[in-house]
Length: 371
Image (cartoon, rainbow, N blue to C red; front, top):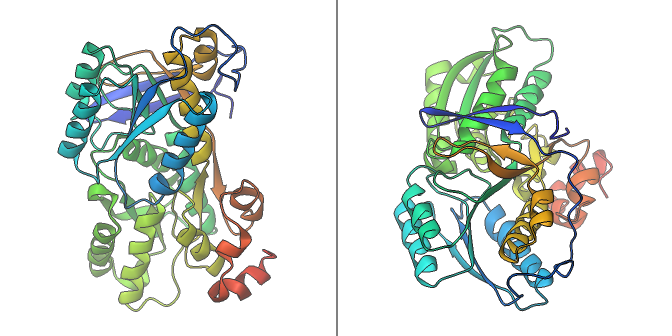
């Protein structure tokens, strides 16, 4: 979907962020860091702060692809100072302070708590260090933001679930398992999903899942089964794949043998295998390598004073509860089902067929022509 026409209403905390997409028609960015006389050379240090490890994407994709791209853009002279907060917002503030003290050239921040980290973002700005919000829009004086079209993610999930329940009326009961209340993305996913689910299903139980932890989702799902009855749950909206795994555990522990359609997000390998095997209906494929590499390009362009390239990479604008008109890039997403695994995660090199089609899933892979 063109960013020239996309308009997204984003709700964060008690405030509303409005994403207005502007600046279309800017020159395409160059992959080269040699297309202008830089204000700073290739010997740069970029801080990368990621939020947690329960979601495998951060260590498997975001971190290594970001490091590799920084190296390629700086002729192997650029360095990445990396830290993962393990879902601890206090720890992340400490990690960020260390980067400020170490006088890194820029910080790429995926916030554990978008609101709580704002004072640290201000400290970085005061120290002359630009902060780029990565994946989640942190509050404070952010230099630029890169993420996926998060409301569209929710719309894709909600629409897929409604399609999976084809022929049902709006009395079909579903459980809604949303993400962490401290993650602004979770609110965007939920808003997008609700735009598709409202009036088409009955949301019998809804949860905000602390820290996105699968174990918390499993406990919430067990509670929902007890309240609704395992035979009365027509489908489950799960905001991501990790939680979908916990939800499936709860359903199976309750004796459910024919699982209802369950959504997800992140295209984690176990989720792709569950989709192949029929346990999970869909996921949302988001190209984390593309997000990480584009973030690296944005950061290097900004540090080196390549304004035309930076503007080309940040054609959109977003507003956070604390600041307006933040330059941004929104990366597109794809609904992942058993019908397009080969054309998405396999074609893009996310996984090999051999990664997915282990002995346990060999027959299921053969059935859908995945070989």
